[in-house]
Image (cartoon, rainbow, N blue to C red; front, top):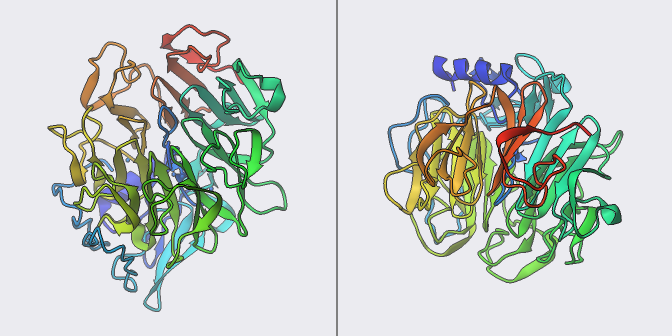
Amino acid sequence: MAGLQRRTLLAASLLLGLAGCPRAAVDGGAFAGADSGGAGMDGDTAANDAGVTDTAATDTSKSDAGATDTATSDTASTDLGDETTAGDAADPDSGAADVLDGCSGGCDDGDPCTTDACVSGACSSKPTAGGGCFGGGTCTAGTCFAEAKGPFRDLFAGYDATCAVSTQGVHCWGANTKGQLGAGEKAGFGGSTTPLPVAASGAQRMIGRSQTICTLLQASGSKLSVACWGDNFWGQLGNGNPQHQDAPVAFPSTADVTSFAVGDRHVCVRTSDGALACSGSDSDGQLGDGTVGDKTSLPIVLPGTKDWLRVYAGGETTCAVRPAGALWCWGDNEYGEVGVGSSKKNLPTPQDTGLRGVSSVAIGDDHVCAVTPLGPYCWGANTSGQVAQTGAGPFLTPKPVAVDAVEVLANDNASCAIGADAKLRCWGSNQQKVIDPDASSTVATPMLVAGLGTIRRAALAEAHLCVIDTGGHMRCRGYNSNGELGNGSTKPSFAWVEVTPP
């Protein structure tokens, strides 16, 4: 994006060390920067949004899980600025995956760890030299992390458990009914109210959904890989054995995994050759191979194009980013989650939402939010205000949301954004008093989450919320019946509880 507005936001975002920050193209090159959200590595590529992820952070259901000005148009084919061209939403029944023509759509893929340019009429994307970030910090799996004194680096908040990546490795706490603590026999069926170590050496990023957790591993001298644990009833861990796993198992891949995402019952990875592979339930076509079926416990590769850049998942819907930051979605579409103007129950092949320059995505149960150079958009069900629009919807095409956002995250029926100011704002269901203990059960417009300083990661579960501040310290609040807050107690706390470093 050549405009001054985007450059200003870029510098602010990267200097704050936030995930999924967009970049500005300059003289054929680009500023290279670096959730997690659950809810897609926030789906970001590694050089390591999740993504998170995204952002993504990570987007999660009962789990884990950003531009200052918003767009004025509410169509899926909105013009997204002077460097991008609007893409018309694909015929929702066609399954066509149109290839972007040369550089006509712009070359900014939304990944802050790559330098993008138009070379001989074609877009080229290369890892930033040295894995560094514009404005300082380091690039880890698609996220620009400022140097932090505290130990925590990434996190997951799920249905009844919480996990974190720190300088001491991976630790989880809470319930363990499906092995979601990943700590093997020492965790026991009853779980733990304090952090337990997980054997996941070299962990960089973390994404999860409900009771399935995955982490990106980068052991010295080895390829980037993903390991997962917890709920595996649908075969989502990809290991060919659809039984719950109480310790990490490798998700099969033949090349470096540069992005990964976890839905309610499926897991997807993007590898360095541009391919996407998914495993688990295909009840709504969320695996993207054109079929609607039962499940698979071994990954299947999406047919056709291999120019995928990042992947995101949530509920039974999957989204992924292609060149020029083009966002494509597929799977469950009962409430218009695929974002192409149709409410056909499921769309099992990738569909073009028309959004470009997408840098972060979060997928809830029945809604999706994405960050573009003109600001965030949300679409799908709005029964709890999770799309921040007037009326229950569903909203079948992306709608602009008036909130400062460089990264988005979501749970079942709520959404949040981390802004360029490193503040957290949320909207949607507040039934469990996670957004604000004193607010009503529905928060219709974005609300600043009080009691926090500046943050760089957040994970929004159905009944608890956790954040990592810019100093690397972690805090949680909410319900705690399984020890999700990690403070050795099972009593709820709506005051912020500091998580003691392992």
